[in-house]
Length: 316
Length: 281
Image (cartoon, rainbow over all chains, first blue to last red; front, top):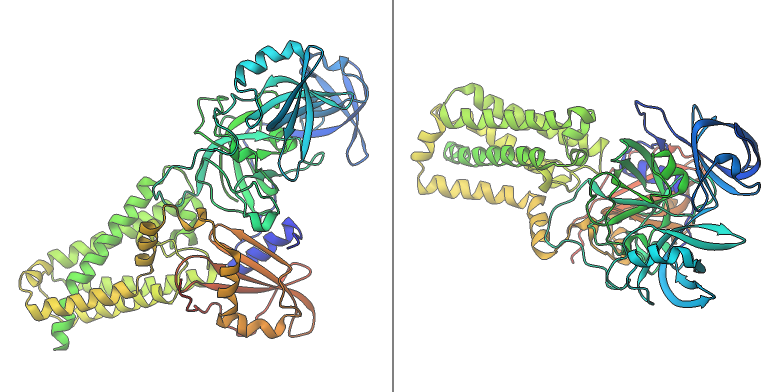
């Protein structure tokens, strides 16, 4: 059955059930709000960065003296190469650069095969029916720290790392989580016993780079397979309720105290397979409850290189 | 005879008030995460920051009335009980109109099913029972209970059975025994929901407006499944007709709305808001 649009679904559901239609976006916050700006670097100097946004507009942002950048490792913002794809956490209504992530990519999938290329490893990953397969490289110098957190480096086990895109190839640099000890098809079931319906669920929120540039939204694991053409969805070790593409979620970054209303725009079938915890601020409850788009993740106060934050979600 | 039946309902009203108090307090106390009350009436009708207070106030009034009925024969508590249930009936009616997805919250989170005719019928019966108490001698409830005869006990049992039949919470409790997960977490076949929709009165009332009987979109959100059909309004304008079917219970609620292409709801012209259907499982 065709999926029309998230906005239309929200309007129709609100009309049928007498709800109020809510607009997506961050909820009011006492401190300074963050803005995510993404695009391609056109020019950069120690004090100014010029980028070409995904809308085709040229944005000029002032680089704050305390600003830092990451491109596989910590770098000076002024050293970013022209042509790099960047996601910028900006302050002051999106005009002042606070943090830059350049050519960053999230590599999440199921290990299909492992090869070698000199001293480096090449890994083929299955990233879900809608994301397909991708081949990534684990450079020799990063393999140690990645293998420590991924002890079962064999087909059928999950892999989650943060890396950089270089010459069209994704190169893993940092482990994003500790690898679950089970095969991806053997996710532990949610806690048994009738515990009633929770309107707020806590767990781990991560990000994924499979969203469009600048897109605001989340990928949610518990969708009906018949509605989404995603045969791997509907699995989670958390007792998540079934929702749909278009449902509005209230997502709170417990660590930063920031909250946004975000629509579900993608199937988070792989996120549901991770029964891990985030240690960003204390230990989160077990289970990955959603994946955010990079822009939404940054605006909620998350650090893309950390890869997760402790989250609490509810219906918007 | 009528006085005997009315007097026999005092223990029933007392038990219902006490159970309502305990369940509401339990729901508020157990709510470790905020927001649970956003699905339960009458709290859902007040702003979010007052929802817990509203629920607790409701529980406090129930406790006061239950205590008054038990300990004194003062008519204030009997009138108060009748007034409380009469107001509850109005509030549930209003809740059903304004928030058809919210449960009545009569017994806390167990009463999460959308308000239907049975919930409304139950408060009406309780109002009638409370009014009946005004006909009985003004003696404390404990004295009346101590003097219960077999006739009284039979009438009380009959009243309790009637309330049980009118309680959708019983089905919810049975579902909790049958299933290990609440409706929101159970995998449910869309074809079953479509079958229930097509056997409903709401469908028959609106099928004439549809330009196609094949849905153009369908999705599930929590315990509701939505089906969208293209159609034309009474004025002939193209619209989307959206049906929402509650996925749990033998008599699921079916809601409908007509929405113009500009996103504005189209008036339904005196069609009923919701009609339950009979669908066995």
